[in-house]
Length: 385
Image (cartoon, rainbow, N blue to C red):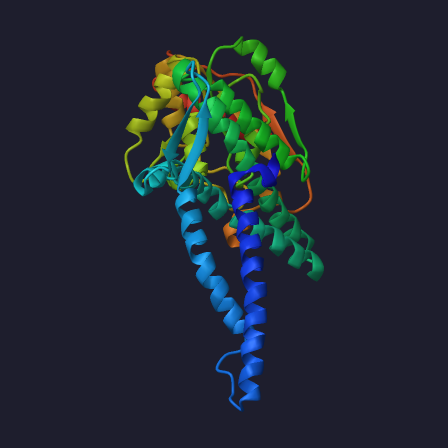
């Protein structure tokens, strides 16, 4: 058994024995010829070792050819038939061997293509982490905290997309096309884990509001001061799937935009009329999903409440649902406009408070129910700002 009992091992042993048997006599014969040449005053033409090697090479040539032919065939014994027979199986032709290796190569290419977006997006948290270390060494705490925040949210988002695409996506597309509660919970988990190490978010009045809504969908409207308002919204009701109306440009970001589309957030293109957004949101509310609007349209640079746009209140009036005003406090101080990651990233110390007000409904007795609802919601938000 093992090496010595195998055909290759036996042939190797025979080859070595033949080589020794040929080399030793050749060495003695060469030595005799060299001594005879020196006695006659002639210089030998070749050394002893070269003559011995030439003799060994001539003897080994047929053995090497025989071994190369044997290596191209595999001998196996078959016991399936009543009589024992010996069959020779030749190796697969070159084109078949190429086909057998094509599948692993295809898998490697597919894996690299799947990991390419992750590798590209990993540059962002890596650079933010390096910037945080640099600012920390230089003593700039706000810049170090801001860069660390963006690095942390980047590293958390990469593994969070794996259950989002592999588990939540098939379930959502097949069983829950409107509320999409499973990917919504994955996003809330990611958002809460992101903000928890840096600031505390306190929600007031949510329980009383939910008791009045009694599980019915609603249109939430909130003031908009900072990029952190999106993170603050993740601390609203855990069981309520909340869809955010956001800029269409964010949906074009690789991986981030894909996840937002999967959750069911609504893109809003400012260069186009808002009729398509109102129609999409009205359909979501009719199918049980809640919507979050920032009716100011853009972030406030000085913290003051800007005039509201009517889109959210049109949706509520048409769908017959409640409008829930939400006041978000202190996000404009923590990260004002101009301190986002693309502007260097700065995050001050502090906490965030969200005040959920009582639900409001459109009054059909008013001359303009939408304008009346809009004004009441604005007054409620401003009362706790």
